[in-house]
Length: 276
Ligand SMILES: [Zn+2]
Image (cartoon, rainbow, N blue to C red):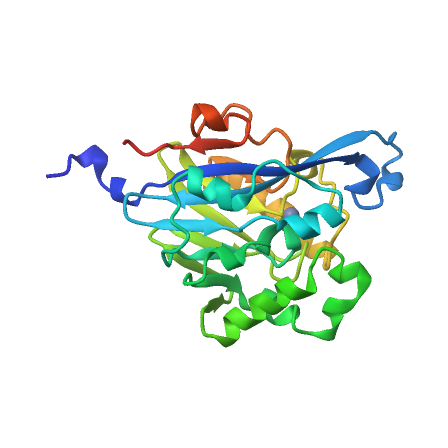
């Protein structure tokens, strides 16, 4: 028998935030047309995250991080290999857990090969766009890797992709929604947890400052859509539909989170940990 207060507890999730990479850069390298703000440049840290969303009955992976080769080539620092991170937070990559691809940049799809049996949930707009000639333009394809886009296309050809339009529910209560902007089909994920509804913005919002000060990220395929996406996130937060916003790359994202385990302090934090 379930007590009234526990109704729906089986549809509550924990969110494990994994900071798997980092880089030190400059503000002018991350904020679009930074010079137009009339502010001094300065150092800026970009962290790289992937997310594990898990209830008693469902596991959903949100993005898979970058692979070592492209990361080395781009001067990014790998803090923990995503394969190792999955193992240490208890994800069996051989099982067909759904993988959400929020967008097709190298730091989000670099390890799809770790999940050979998983359905891959991705916006149809995103999936289709990266198969067009525009994907090869330097200002559009800069953050993609050709072989990784081919892997995504092959997954679609093999029938493992789950393309959606608008939004879709990937597990009970876990909803993926396309907002565009950063890429044509950039998507976000909402997750019900014991600490309220968590919004994983991925790169609809890279940094908290981007959201608070309405400063778009340097890489964008549709600037009005990016501004609208930022407003959507602020509206969701203001209306109470979302209790907590977790961004794609903010260096403070793990602050205040309980470490997943003592040995992963500074690498993996948990929101709404499930009772053991
Ligand atoms: Zn990213």
